[in-house]
Length: 272
Image (cartoon, rainbow, N blue to C red):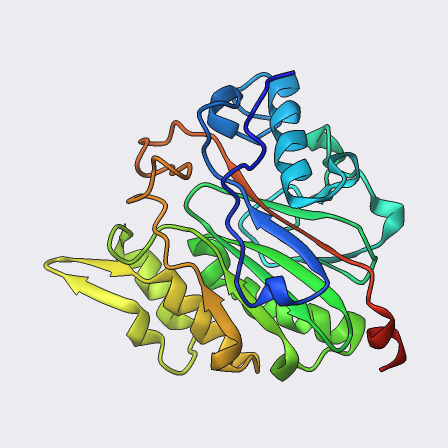
């Protein structure tokens, strides 16, 4: 077992730390194998990736063996999970939930995980229903509105009011670095949400897509309050020394993870 310092560099959303929710975004850390890569189906030996997961999980305060993840396909499918799903994707990617980029739950202590390396990780928490959702959102997920699907999934599964949701947009490639082709811009504009053009930044004969603002637009269109959305403002390409970035590494990279689990409600919350 690799020995690491007692505190790993986990990013947490300030607002979400005030609630009974354990969460964190992992990163790169040189004292872990492969700089802390958590991809169990990547270039790093699976045993080492599992060792990394265990280290990050311990720092966040969750059970790595119970992690639930999806086989991410850049789509907008949302899966409702409970304790019967514990461990799906925790050790073998083949056991993860097929073709799923968003997961929601009300199961206390069940850790959800999404992988990213430039794509946008989103956490949504409903403090009234004590419900949790995570989504992996690349440009394909953005143009297929997985952010809106996540909100709708929590509405359907838990009767969440979108206006109650607290949302975190994690480290991901920023508008400074995300140059895209016309086909990406056209697909985003075709979504037809109010203010779509505000997420497009023309630069000469090319354009940059602001995934942070695009997903904020999608979340607000789904009913999430603007002042309930917090984002890290961390560009993974610019900060590739701290986070894995596909673009910065020309496609050769590891993955970091966004992990969250509902904590037990305090007694006052049970009586509310």
